Image 1 (cartoon, rainbow, N blue to C red):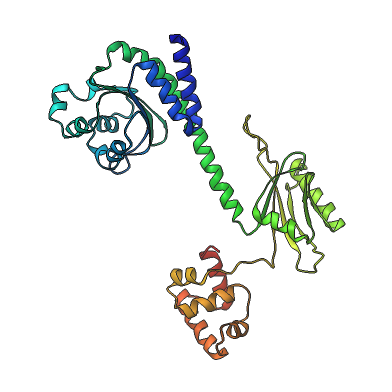
Image 2: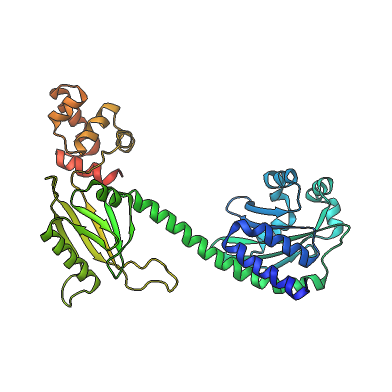
Length: 373
């Protein structure tokens, strides 16, 4: 492979690896071949307490040596110390960090000499995001010799692409993490959440929305969107969705409604709201309308242990409070717990005192707004 082709392969490999971490070994292999190195590593540096490398991918290193390095030697490494002190330095090599004479007296290099032939380093780094410091390090043995000025000049070209690749990878990685967190939070929401696109098609639905569809109690989700079994309710819903897509001048976009259920249970509450009209150019998800559907008969009880911790309740008081939050009367809760109504009244009085409330409605409101179900 010609030199220009080899360098191009290295550059392409770094871009590929920046968006897919599993490709770093292949990218590092290309990098060592193009730079006359015997080893290479991709690293992410964490300086929040003492220096550590939570991400560290290497090639041509002994695994036991790397494990010892990560567990014990990283804070003692002069190159790591230099990177911590100079996060904006794009290229770092041995000559900037330590002299050969100082290496002979340094405890880190004494340890490295006893466990590895690797001796010289050339590092390219970038800060692709807030408090994110990452890069690649090239390694040569003592026999191969140090990196010369010509090696550094060649690496300048590669480092520019490394910086751009890591910036792209950081943005995509951060967006992916945010998407996963958001999806998980929406998935755990006790309300059904649906996002419709401009053609009224469902582009996202959480677990509760799928459950409502499976219940077959008046709500249907399909390729063409959401429909309600009750004709009049469905017409009203479609009007609200249409209004959310094309707000009428002077009218509030979207709106709320109640949807009847064939089972005869209390109606669903439906909230319709428009989404921001502009989506990123490369986004595959383009929501236009958001629907939130709540079921008044689907209320998860608050966990007694959370109530106990939040308000310093006894276990008995917390169990009573958890039942009251579900809508049970004091007498019904007493029967469920197997205690007398008089005992329940005493515990309720203790709940009032510990929560600084005076009425049962006030108590329940406080519990619901303080402790997440």
